Image (cartoon, rainbow, N blue to C red; front, side, top):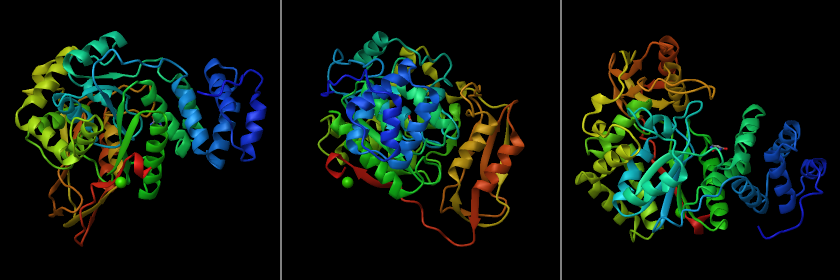
Length: 447
Ligand code: URA
Ligand code: CA
């Protein structure tokens, strides 16, 4: 931060009044606010009032950058310079069946770019990478920073949970946003996501901004705005950010649920499964390779990554990462070692036609009702349960044909999940085109 003006004499009321009438907060005011959030000198009702004023009036780029940096600096700033080479990270705005990290992290590491990834847990209808990894017997995702650095240096990749001291301001703000209807506010989403990525210390970050019925921003226009703003503000922070806007009008992979998604990731790494999940993983990974200077073009990057699937190196790297984090690497050779649900329930088509649309957030919520996700942070996940989809949007469906298999456990709300899933899948009489998978690419110069 360049502005060294003291933040001592700035009162919450002054900041609130300024934003209430649509004024632009300066850097000192924003830093005073974030400091007040972390040290408790701003009351929850004052913070909440300011969040609402920000939602109503928006924020300029200058304000958004200042908020992002103040939040990033509100706790530990990781210094990964001891790890040699370019360090890369990837972030998804959240989706259903969105397992790209488990695929691209080992593949990118095989191509010589180190992946130092900090991930989150699932909340609501979206899944979280940490919960998926913990479905692997023995796997640890909590690690001190020294061990994290050592693992990334030695084997080229690690995926761990964010430490408690990473962007603590975001934890307070996010909890208040969650209960004040201020989650889907552009500058607040941007500063929340970017502050954590900036504090986590990587040089190159690729963002996967989802669009569609299972995304935080359902419309393409809003998704583009979010992606452009994140790339613009991220690059102003001095790191290399780019973004893909990818489809979430249906689950990305066909498996939804923690152990199930690990299984599908292994199938992709083993070369047994193709489709949208593999395509998006390779596109994101290729942009990490070009951003890090390891590939000249995205096409070359995709070829390099695909070659690591064909040679088996990607799957072996995943096994190496699992072993390094205490997990059982044999799951990569034998997915029957993953937790399995006690029973399954089939969902079949009542009428013939075409699968014309999927309410994707509801598919995620159905998986949550089975026990694959959380409504509240304290909810306990069942790693074995979830949904396997057998049809994608545009597919022809015969009467009584299998649409999905629910993997249910003892604590599953199987009737609630079945009904929600059934209503989420629309079957119509007319053929529909398949959704576009990659809607746009936002690089620094597009933002
Ligand atoms: N993910 C985050 O981390 N923060 C947001 O505000 C939205 C999605
Ligand atoms: Ca572009």
